[in-house]
Image (cartoon, rainbow, N blue to C red; front, side):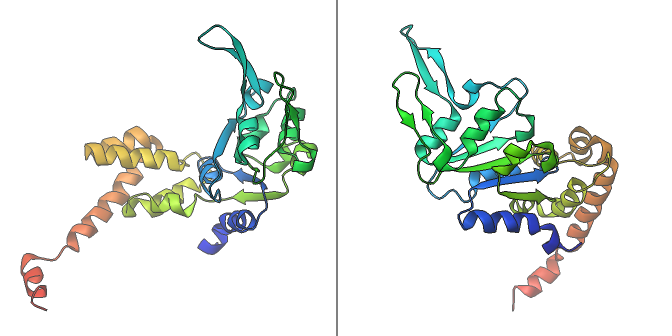
Length: 252
């Protein structure tokens, strides 16, 4: 499989979102940057809001809830979904497959087309609708078939993400990029997501201890990582010009 084939998911997501398709599902392995992409890419001047789905989530997490202020007065505080509507922002629905059945209908109303969406503010009676520019990026670790047909129908673009985002790979130290790409794409027990490799890179930079950093952050593959990076470091040392070679080179 070529790099261009592996990047096809990201290319598809970029193409769709850059050209105005605004209901997108990104699915696949965890730790590949799906949520980060939704929160940061193709936003223009809009803000992004994150809704993390759990088995215990309620209407209040999406729409809002009454809270008591410092003066003891109860006021309705709008949730992230309504904030995204008001501002014409991006709602990133993280782990959408974990939404519970009690509020699935409310979520469907939130991510539906603009013409079908409205909410009446419980205090003011104001009818709130999505402002121009409102978009939805949903993410999940799994397959689209894990979602109900009604939810899936509202997510017109469905893109499988098979590898970490190229910008995430590029953010790692050069000697770690190929290793991280290889292990983050595995389907066995030795797989580690990009989160682990970023933690490893940070710990290695802070401590300078390759073996200890690998055993803390990547314990199952620590020996392989130490061996691979030791070889890379050795090759880097061999490629450093000798003092006399550097002196000669400076005369050109």
